[in-house]
Amino acid sequence: MKVAAKLEAIQQQIADACFKVHRNPEEVRLIAVTKYVSTKRAQEALDAGVCELGENRDDGLLEKWSLLKDKPVWHFIGSLQTRKVKNIIDKIDYIHSLDRISLAEEIQKRSPKKIKCLVQVNVSGEESKHGLHPDEVIPFIEQLQAFDKIGIVGLMTMAPLTNDEEVLRNCFRLLRELREQVKARQFAFAPCDHLSMGMSNDFHIAVEEGATMVRIGTALVGEDEERVTK
Ligand SMILES: *Cc1c(COP(=O)(O)O)cnc(C)c1O
Image 1 (cartoon, rainbow, N blue to C red):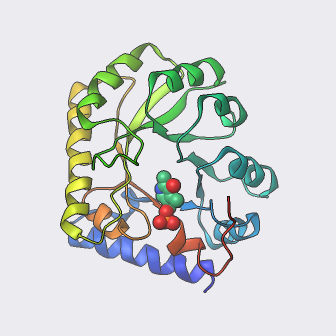
Image 2 (cartoon, rainbow, N blue to C red; image 1 turned 135 degrees about the vertical axis):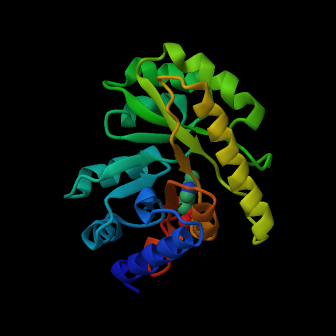
């Protein structure tokens, strides 16, 4: 199936989920995750009307960044090694995976401009997942006050791999509650309006629970094309 047709179906699912909970679909931004696919496929997504792309590795990002003829909004969504920051920092608009002070320090040192960051939270507590424990999030954000290159615009999580809707819903709900706690602090450097949650399998639930950014790969650009093995 063409990306355009998949995009239309996904936008409809987002609209349906919003309708259920009385949200405005315009509050939900769709990030096309192109990590598995070619630059050509990423271009097809842009041609279909996508304007935000996500990559989880520096090499994948750099390749698409240099080859795409359009300039989308770029989201770095994967765990970011400190030594890789300098390669990508001037090419991206958002980092979804801020999870440690050493990374914040490197961003502060290398970024030419203030960069929008989301703090990654390991809500489910799975050991394989990156991110801060929910209890660590507010103390962590408080420490970032002095970093004038970092704006905390939201929280991000990856839900556990399960089809159990209640487990997914609870995970997303916890992230939203945590965001409310951060917002209540009214830090000028951390407006924390965004909730980056929901992927191909669970975005409809994430949207019902308040997601403002969904990160969709497989369901939008995947399947037809052989996956690039990395
Ligand atoms: C790969 C990836 C996605 C997209 O996953 P799909 O299941 O293919 O939609 C979203 N977020 C992160 C952090 C990812 O690494």
